[in-house]
Length: 45
Image 1 (tube, rainbow, N blue to C red):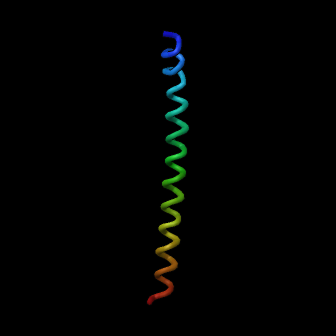
Image 2 (cartoon, helix red, strand yellow):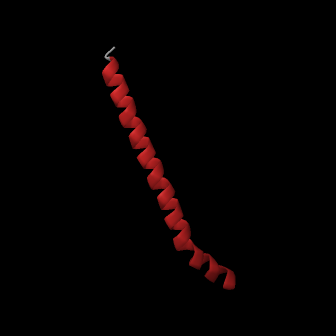
Image 3 (cartoon, rainbow, N blue to C red):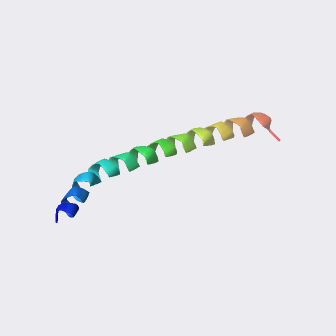
């Protein structure tokens, strides 16, 4: 019973950390995509 209580107590922190990591990954991907678009646009094949 104690184990489960500890697990539940740790969950919010784990979720928050996962959310922060996911958010920063999305931001990086968005930035990279914008950079690619800018680069390919300036080339004009």
